[in-house]
Structure formats: structure tokens, C-alpha cells
Amino acid sequence: MKTAIIGTGYVGLTTGVALAYLGHEVTCLDLDAAKVENLKKGISPIYEPHLSELMKLASAKLKFTLDADEALRNAEVVFIAVGTPSLPDGNPNLTYLKSAAESIGERINAPYVVIVNKSTVPIGSGNWVESLVRDSYRAKNPAKNSNFVVASNPEFLREGSALSDMLYADRVVVGADDQRALDVLRKLYQPLIEQTFEAPAFLPRPEGFRAVHFLTSDLQSAELIKYAANAFLALKISFINEISELSEKVGADIQHVSRGIGLDSRIGNRFLQAGIGWGGSCFGKDTAALISTGKEYGLSMPITKAARDVNARQRARMVEILMGELKILKGRKIGILGLSFKPFTDDLRDSPALDIAQRLLERGAKVVGFDPISMDRAKREWTHIPVEFAASADAVFSEADAVLLVTDWPDFKNLPFEKCAEQMKHKLILDGRGQLEPGRLQAAGIRHIALGRSTR
Ligand code: UDX
Image 1 (cartoon, rainbow, N blue to C red):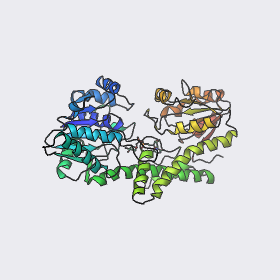
Image 2: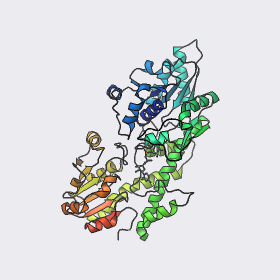
Image 3: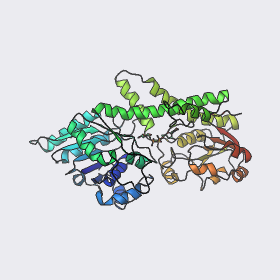
Image 4: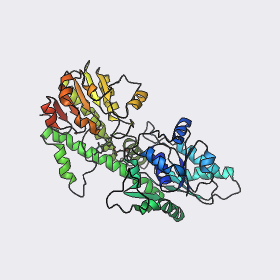
């Protein structure tokens, strides 16, 4: 099917490449000329494992353009995947969504068009998008009846595993108030639902994986599913982090507690890794949006609020624990291992590392950071604070009064800790992800404190 994708960010690009790989004729539209030029050369603007390889495999069906006419003219399905970043009051900024909707209305002319909200949008905005498209369509075609429907198709992609999350999804959710639109989207996703596509060698189909749930609903339910899913995942993490603070006090080990509750099939063991908590562009934004939507209806959303409060506290706790150990931070040198908000991505949005670095710098400490992938981006984006950058993970330990592990990149587990210890002024590591082996560090003479384990 002729498919247009508006916006080539994490969601738009992943969706476009995957749909082209499934065999659809996909044209991706963006307003950033440099980004489009690179995409035409097969260069991905984001670090997403296997994205460039899949772009190559799908290249015959994949186009990138700055020209809205070229992208939208004959499209049967149009995905809106533009950014909806948070405004200071927690509401999403819908400027890009509005201009995308108006641009669509002016250009679509296929007999029947399904316009799909892929961006995370406030609940009920599907109707708003429909009215925007209709107004701009009517202005352009006063005598013609428009023939389009707006649907919601929320994404559940995790950065760093976006392609496998899409090709081997737990479920595809589509919401629309028109059965024909749901049928069009079922057809679009057919190869995914039935797993009939050839699995890429670098992204093999999981053992025994045969089909994807295709859930249809009304528009509002699909929009709410997205927010509720992210809020629950954020809550799960904040719950284990709330328990982790208590477990430190009572001398328990949060990793045993997490495993012990996670083995209960009703709870499940995923998203129960205690530590410095969540960052990224979604959990913070979506929980804030859910709270502000609740407020519009006079609902206080206390559980979603608590998830955010506990998460914010985790970052502060890292600094509190450090102050408890070093007493004075002024003039100290603190190393930070990991800058991205999670491993296998270069995304720094709402990164705990940035938050902690700012708190340390405010207290007069010197901060030296390292990240295997996101350093270039950090050097470009963190110009507002005097963070220094180390050439390697080991170099972070040189003359350090303490080193904080903030992102659980696998390589950090196997650093030469004996050698690192020799370079440190104070042999202290705060393990913000509970990732390091206590025995290994003890053997190297390094005091290891992990969130959720007693500091005995
Ligand atoms: C999330 C949702 O998982 C995804 O479904 C949605 O589409 C977008 O938002 P993402 O933000 O990319 O995906 O990453 P995710 O893997 O969910 O991790 C989010 C944050 O939670 C990261 O900072 C991660 O370090 C943290 N996390 C995750 C924990 O602290 N503990 C865990 O157990 C899991």
C-alpha cells in the first residue's frame, strides 16, 4: 500500500523502514534538509541497532523527501509521527501535529485515506486532527467530499530494541470510529500479524513466535492504552525503587526482593530493575500528559503522580548518598559512567546522568563523564554545563573521589577495576543500576554502594 510517514524521528523512521521491509511503498517526509539528505544516503540520524541494515534491505520500497506533495499525493495511509514534546506545564506541544494535519488536508487525493496518529497525542486529539484535516481539505477542495478517516495506532517501541519491538510486537493496537479504516490497517499490518515476512538475518524471529495480537478499538481507547501502558511501566519501576530505599534501611538486598516478587506470574520480572530510575523522552512526557488530562476532568491521578515523585527522588538520592560518603563535594572530582538514558541508544533526553551532573556541579564538584555511544551528542547538547568528557571508561577513574555508574552499558561490568582503583583518590563506586559485582570490587579494594543494598 502507498504509505506516507510524516516525521523521521525514532518512531517515524522505525515505522517507515519496517513497513517498507514488509513490502509497502513508503515515502518518509521531513522538514530537516540535512536529515533527509543523509537518509537518502542510507545514513540514519539516530543510533538504533540494525536500523541502517534494514534501511538497506528495504531501500527499493523506501523514499525520503522534503516535498509534502510527493509524499502525500497518492498516499492511502498517512502516519503522523511528529514530535509532541512536553510544554513546561506538562501539556504536549502540538504545533507540529497541527501543521502536519493541515498539510495532509491540502494534499491527499486518494479515493480513501486513513490518517494514523502514531505520535503520542493527548486523549481525544484524534477528533481534533480530523477537524484540522477536514478544514484544510475543504479550503482546497470546496466542491469535493473528503474521504478520509483518522485512526490511532500507538507505538510501544523501546529505544535500543525498536525494530524487534515492531517486527515481533506483543500487540498492534488500532483505534478508529470507522470499520473500513480498521480493515485497511489490518491489511497494512497483515505480514506482521501473521508473521509471514522473512525474518532479517540480524533480527531473527524469536523461537516459537507465530503471530501478533491485532487489537481494534475506538479512537479514545487506543490513545489511552498508550498512556496507561507507559504510566504502568513507569509505576512498576518506581514501585521497586520505593521498596529499594526501604530495603537499604532494613539491610535487605533489593535484587533478591525484585527477583522474589517478579517470579510471581501475576507480577512478572520485567521493569523491576531497581536503580536510578527512568529517563528518556516517553515516561516523563506521558505521565505528565496523563496527569494534565486527568486535571481537565477534575481527577488528581495520585498513583501516576507518585511514580514521577519517586523517580525524581532517585536522582537526588544518588547525590545524598555521595555526600554522606564524601561529606564535602566542593572541589571533588566525580566520574560518571554512562550518559544516555539507557543502554543501546544515544538519546540523552531526560537522562539521569545530566540531572545528577547538574546537582554535582551546583555543589562545586568537577564532573567527568564517559559513554560508549552518546558522547558526541552530549558534547553538542550539554554545552550549558561544564561537564568534562573522558576518552575511555577507565579514564573516568583518574584522580576521582568517586565514580557513579548511571547507565548500565554491559561493558562497564568488566572494567579492569584493580587498575582503576590505583588511579582513584577515594576508592568509591556508587552503582546506580545495581549492575556491578560487589565481590569483584571488594577484591579491587573499592567500596561499592548500590541503590537498594544496605550501605553496611
Ligand atoms: C518506553 C516504553 O518501554 C515503550 O513501550 C514506549 O513506546 C516508549 O517508552 P523507552 O523509554 O525507549 O521505552 O525505554 P525503556 O526500555 O522503557 O526504559 C525507560 C527507562 O526506564 C530507562 O531509563 C531505563 O533505564 C529505565 N528502566 C527500565 C529501569 O530503571 N528499570 C527497569 O527495570 C527498566
